[in-house]
Length: 246
Ligand code: SAM
Image 1: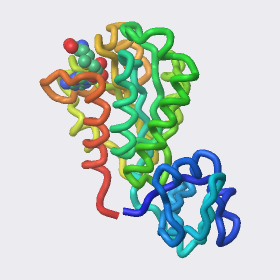
Image 2: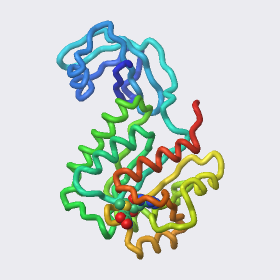
Image 3: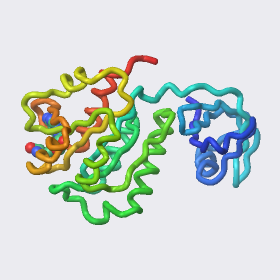
Image 4: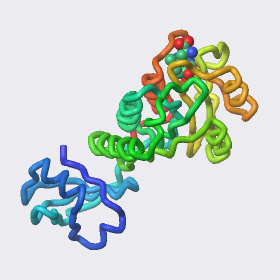
């Protein structure tokens, strides 16, 4: 499999592209050689298949051979609103959900979050975005999921109008299964948002807020999943239901 790099669309001006900065450092780690073929993705689901023509400490020169549409992007943009889990688990959520096709992950502070203040500062955001980049490279994605700024639940709920559909995973839900919810969705949706609670779950008043905002409570079945597993499970099910082989 060709090594993959993400570049900005503005970097692709002619047939020759110069990789510098973090991409040049990544190329050095990979010990790229002149003549080797690599893929550059513009982050907007277009892949440029290139050949390395020159290497230096500072940059890597490549020539474009041809370009293709990236087929690894899901047909619907899925955003996970993840209640901040205990330290370290967010890394796992980002890594696995990126491989599964998530478009964005928004960390949310809810009543029962035990995450320390340090989990909410911007250094963590940079680290989380780097994890998303690395997982997007590895999984041959056409886009890098955006890790949003930490939000309050109220703030997140205010933005739900931007999505075609939104639901919250609630283990005490006894009627609506994820399967029934997804099969009830209109065809051709462009965006879906869903919420996963922290280790202690959502508080009752938070569930009431979801319902007041018209957000469906959905069950993932009779077993209680860990917070870091629930998001990937939902993504896999959404893609099972909505994604064919393009
Ligand atoms: N209240 C749970 C308990 O009794 O242990 C703890 C919450 S669970 C560890 C973390 C989150 O994963 C929940 O807030 C929910 O969003 C999701 N989740 C886990 N299992 C679920 C299920 N069977 N149905 C719906 N959501 C589930």
